[in-house]
Length: 278
Ligand SMILES: [Zn+2]
Image (tube, rainbow, N blue to C red; front, side, top):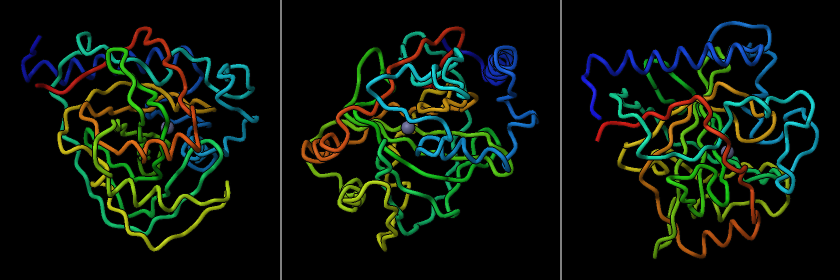
């Protein structure tokens, strides 16, 4: 169902506003840009580091994903990520283009015990719906966390971006499927994985994030959470439809390190998933 150009932004806002209201009702947090004592940058850079580990929360793992039992986390809130995306139920909307300002930067990498993660250096930004977000880090999940019509991909990459001066997050999710050739950009990362867990290694390898984004910008978007404790809500997810490819060996290299670091899909509940126009 195609909507007129006049309708879609207001539809998007309406859905978003309702979700915000909903979020504010069920959590005591404003996840939608309002100011509360817990959402300041000063005391909550934790939201960004969260996917890395230092959640301040108790130890957690993927053996038992009942993370809502951990104290001080938002994993119980019913607006969680990841989700299954039903492509027929997703609502087509005129979504603004994502604007990329991605400059090369030297890779700093860690195997943090939950994933392999690369840090940003304040040189890469995206603009989404008029707001500018700084790239903070990317990391991988095996198998994919989001599913498309119930289908799971071998790998999913998350590129975490944070709005300057706030704790608002946009995460770009990129699926990786098995192909026949080595993905040279993935190889740059996977050949530098430190042997020692939790050891941050500064390399001279230059990365440009646009190499990790699918050429086709068709995507789904919804409001969810971090997929690791503290499961902070109010995260804008942008899930690209087109997967990138990696070789069987590359996927095996990651799965040898992490045989399962994917949170199971969470109920969509009242949320709507929007999709770019065909
Ligand atoms: Zn992630």
